[in-house]
Amino acid sequence: MAPQAATWREAKPATIAGALTRANALPCGNWYVIGASREIGGQTPVGRSLAGTDVVVRRDTEGRLKAGHGSCPHLGAPLRDSPVVCGTLVCHWHGLALQGDAFAGWTPYPVYDDGVLVWVRLDATGGEAPLDRTVLPARPELMGSVAAVCTTVGTCEPEDIVAARLDPWHGAWFHPYSFVDLKVLDTSHGSSPDHEDGFAVDVSLEEPHRGGRAGT
Image (cartoon, rainbow, N blue to C red):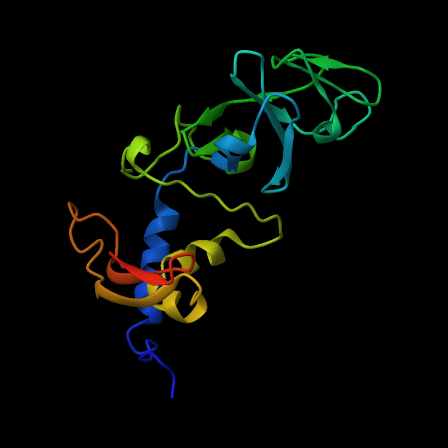
């Protein structure tokens, strides 16, 4: 017998699908995550493909984020492989210097650092009415919190990723290295206009270095 009770009866497909439908209806303002704040420095750029668009981001000498199209407008060199010299991104094929403003056909993108994640706004890709800032849920203060970001490069359907996040019942089964036990207590998210989306869970987390459990 499995060491934990089956959760397939509680994990109703209609509940997950309804949460996914509501999530997809929320505005994103065309903002996409490109990486963790701490992994983007001023020495080398970070290049990613976001929804089919190549993007490069780095910091200037003042620590300000600069983002734009990931290909050099001259002959298409991948800018993620180019060096940052005194805060300026210099194409490693022919030396085109990009300080962060529109220049020689290169297009800059709005970029935002929320303290944990770095976001880039791609209006042509998102197709929504643009927002000045990405929409974020309420977070605890960073000074009293632990932030962890895992970056995985792959090809996926965003809806599948969101649907997995909206299925807490799979936690202890699919992620036993993290969750010792996980029980969903409330799924009444979205039940009224003033009721925010969310799941209430009772969870015990594994602490491998201490050999114990941490309950929340």
